[in-house]
Each structure stands twice: as structure tokens, then as C-alpha cells.
Image 1 (cartoon, one colour):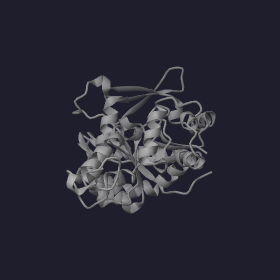
Image 2 (tube, helix red, strand yellow; image 1 turned 90 degrees about the vertical axis):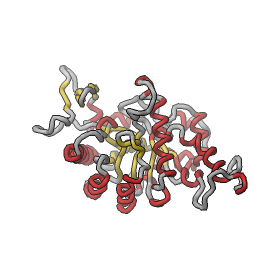
Image 3 (cartoon, helix red, strand yellow; image 1 turned 180 degrees about the horizontal axis):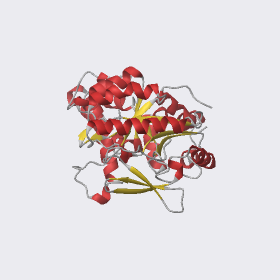
Image 4 (tube, one colour; image 1 turned 90 degrees about the horizontal axis):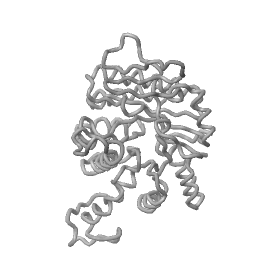
Length: 334
């Protein structure tokens, strides 16, 4: 079995009479695709983004048994007025639930919330659960503020209380200090790392120990920074026993490695050498398959690089499907 835990959707349409700040989906002449128009954005969306039958057919063709569907990240517009952001989230969430109803054994959806207002976002989580969606997608920052900022703690605490999974999708920051051409490459890695590090250093990971969080793209540079954080915490190299007199920033809580191994990470890192590092440092029980499909093409077949690495069968089964259901907190569907 193979679960693609990082795949995206777009609604086919938006309500008539919606606020002007809502997206639009415009027809494409002579084609089943539609064009997403959202402010200055123009994105041609193939019908697989919003048609259940086409979705399942393409999954089957690429060897995917189950997809975890999250909204395309441009929909996470935290600059909208809160009532409009809430209205947009509800429309997308209802569409997501409807799309997944086409084949609940193969399509699992995540909701979205207006995280610019943590109280409103927390309040919407119960509605997401009632729709049958086992989790929620958020961006790695909210208007340049990392998600580990204490203002977002009520949202994470409510997700933990309800048992909802959280998928953190790395998003470039307007104040990230990188040129525009780096937005899809280096900026994603930087923001993924900042988001994960902020949940640890901001106290969210300590205060919400049962929270199930997954980061896109291996959390960018975060896994490579953990050994340095571990040294500052313990004074020791190679995750050896602590040497307190050498520790720069000691504390009596869990180590940086322990915190990092509470999170999940999708394995969309494009290189088997990077995958080996993630497996060795974080553990095969922390990784999921991801593709960004259909915004990006999948490997053909899905999971090809993972399957080429001669991993033990138990490790491969964990990465290809077991971990996804553990993260989502639901029983495996077959």
C-alpha cells in the first residue's frame, strides 16, 4: 500500500455573490481545466484538482492507494479580513468533504482555517471534525510571524484536544530576505525550518505533547540544524550522553532530538541521500510519502526512490503507509 500524504486540491467553483477578495475559477476554452484567479495569481488547474473520478484514475495509474488532500497553499490567505477568511475556509472545507465522499476509502481530506485570528481558527476546528476531516493544513508563518509564536497556542491546544492532525505547509515569507526567484526553492526550505524550530523554542511542543504535526518537504533545513541544537543543549557530539559543563543552553526538558522525533515529515526531498539522512536522524517511523501532486508531477511510479533504497520491509511499510495513518490518528483504510 502507498499513501500520498501531501497532495492538493482546488474547488471547482466559488459561491455566486462571494466577496471580491474570494478566488474565482474561470473556464478554459475547449478544455476541462479551469483558471484560478486570486488577486494577481493566475494558475491553470487541471480537472484532477477538483474531479473525483479523474483524481482516482490518476492515483491508480501512478500506484497510489490513498491520497491525503489539502488545499493548494495559495488559498491560505491570512491577509483577508477574518469574516472573509472564515467564509473562504468553510467553502473549501465543504468542497473537500464532498470530493472525499466520492471514494472515502481512497481520499482523505484536510481542512483550512483563518489562522490570522487564532481564536476563530480554534473555533472552526470542531466544524472540520464534524465534516469528517481528520486534520487541518496551515502555512508555516502567518503574515511573517512563525507559527510557534505564543498567540497561536490556543489553536494548537484545541487541535490537540480534538485529536486533529496538523499539516504545516512551508510558505515563503514576504520578509524572508531572499529574491523572488528563490520563493519556490530556498525560501520553502528556510520557512519549513523556522516553523519547526519555532514550535520547539516557542514552547508549543512542550505544552501540547500529544499534538500530531507533519511538516512538508522534510521541514526544510530543520533536520540538519538539530545536531547543533542538541550540542547546545547537552554539550556532547553525536547524541552522546550530556556533558553539562560544556552545555551552552541546558535545560531539564526533552532534548532537541526528542522534540524533533515527535513530529512527522513528508519525504518530498528529491534525493535518496537526503532521505537516508532523515531516516537515520529522525527515524523511519517519522516519515511519510508526499508528492505535491498535481501541482507537481509524481515520481513514476509513486515512491520509486524510496523503493530503490533497499530499506527493511518494516521501515518501508512505515514510510509508505503506516505513518500516515498514525499521524492522522485514524485506522488504516484498505
